[in-house]
Structures are given as C-alpha cells and as structure tokens.
Length: 387
Ligand SMILES: Cc1ncc(COP(=O)(O)O)c(C=O)c1O
Image (cartoon, rainbow, N blue to C red; front, side, top):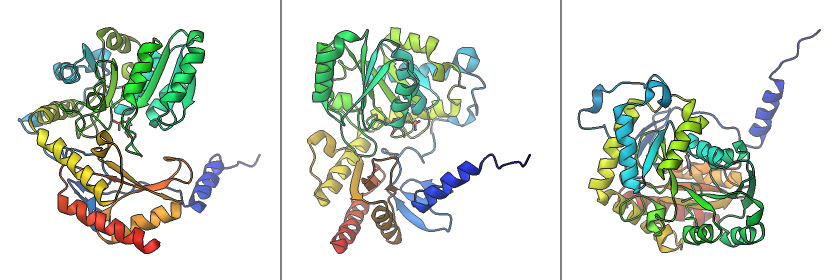
C-alpha cells in the first residue's frame, strides 16, 4: 500500500494561511527595555510588549542570583518551596484576600480555575472577547457556557433574570482589561448582578495587576469592587515582568484549587528563579508607585494625541489599539512604522474578530514622553496620508 504523507493536511492548511497572509512564524528578537533588536540588527523602539512597569529586563536585585533553576516537581509533590509560600502570602496580602496560590503561568491559572470551579449543572457567562485562557477554561469545564456580547452587562442581567433558577451555580468570568482592546470590563455592574442573583464573578486581572488602582492591584481596585470580586486571577508575566500566574481569593477556594485544579496539580511548579523575580517585583510595585503613574500618564498622553476618547479608568490603560480593518492595511501601517524605527505589531484574526485587524500599541513605564510623542506623530502622518 502506498504510504501517504500523514501531515499533508497540515501543509495544506499552512499554505492556506500563507495565501491569506496569516501565516505566522517565530522570529528571534532581543527585547531590552524599550528597545527591540530584529534578526537583521535593526533596532526599534518597542511598543509591542506587556512589560508595563519596565521590570522585565531589569536584573533581579537583592542577591537573588544563586537561586535554583527549576523546582524539580509539581507543587503538591515537592516543588513548593518556602519562597513559593512567601510569594503566595505576598500576593494574598497585596490582593487583600485570605489566600493565594501560584501557577506555572497566567494561562493555566485562568483555564484551570474556570474549569475546576464551574461544574456540571452550573452556568458560565463569559464575555465574547475574553482571553483564550478563560475560553479554554470554559471548554474544559463540564458547566454549560453562554458567551455574552462584549461588555454587555445588560445581556448578563437578562440571562440571570430568566435562567438563574435553572442552574446550581452561575459564574461570570471576564477579563478585567481586555488585552487587544484596552477596554475595561463593567465590573461595578457585573458585581452588582452577581450579588443580586447569587452568582460568582471571576476577574482575570492580567493587564491590571501592577498598573491600575491606587495600590496597583488592578482594575477591581480602580473601580472600587475589590471586596465584591472574591476570586481574582493574575499573571506574573506582564507588569510583574517575569513568568507565572496566580489566583487570589477565599481560603476555601484556594484549598480546593490546590486539591482539584489539574493545571496546578499536574504541572511542574513555577521555577524558583521566577518566584524570586516576582517577589522582588511586588516590592517595587509597593515602593515605586511612580512607575504606574508614569505609564498611565503616557497612556493618557498617547490617547490625547490620537484623539481617542474613553472614560477615566480606561484612559490610563497602557494598551491602545488603533483599529484598521483589513489585515493588509494593518500590516502595511506596522511596516511603515517599523521603517520609522517603531515596533508596533499588527494584530489580525483569529486573535481579533474578522475585519478588525489593528495595531496594538502597548506602553511601558520605561518609555519617555518623547518616544510616545514621536510615535503619535508617525501614526498621525501615516493615517493622514491614507485619507
Ligand atoms: C487577559 C490575559 N489573561 C491571561 C493571559 C495569560 O498569561 P500568561 O502569559 O502569564 O500565561 C494573558 C496573556 O497573554 C492575557 O492577556
């Protein structure tokens, strides 16, 4: 029998993507602070990372260099060190929750928590533009999942009014700040609905931690709903500048995750080096509030320069999308900016919905006002020349 190529279908799919100009590949770049160096040596100002406070490329101080490379085991076996415990306690203290637990990544913190807490007979209400990690959590859960239109607490209210009785428990899961839009979730309204309908609100603070709120704990704090949102998920990979994820909440929830959450139990715990980097970063978040004030003011400045009008909380979010529409136009603008010395990635479907390709500008406390102004001038120039 003639052997067929078992991967021929993958070749076909990749060439389809190529034809649609959606084939992606990994490009080895060097990112250092606000600079990014391309493989051909071109140096650009980096407006594409999530290092909101500028920690990622700073060395970890306090003599933490002799730390072990890996934890060697999952948390429940013997991969949970005194430093992991200290980090979990630091996070619980930072988040003002009874307890917290550390995950190997933010992705598995989101997916595992959603999948574990929402059971058969429950309903999950999930924002249409939630991050893939929450979406995968919904897929892995045995609960029924209903996707609601982006930000529509009215839709959530309607479902709860009509259907709350049909389910054992209802979980409302949402990103606090949406990673590709910079939108802030309507947490006050959702928290009120959760309370009214005996439901639980889970917020992914991935893009809020370290940046928003008086103490930098995130969007729940900024909107004054920290007390009402009992379960908050975060990442150590964006403003915290390292790697890893966490869940903060009531002790019983954290204990349950430790006992039942598969993405926590069956994965090697976070590397000790990342644990120590995160511990040092939480100290900086507390001791250097100027960083978050600076990045928020840069975000307001850039929005002002680009005439993007949003409410006060959203104005300080360091993610600024520039909606373009077609993939080709977004790629063109990204490469025009590259030629001017700026790295601003074009984000295309499936990361964003069809027809909403965009540039995603992300800011860091390491950027200067001058860098932001130069970027704004370049964007203006190119958008203007297209009209
Ligand atoms: C909203 C959101 N949640 C979760 C994650 C996952 O975090 P991590 O990169 O730590 O796995 C991301 C990162 O891309 C994100 O943007």
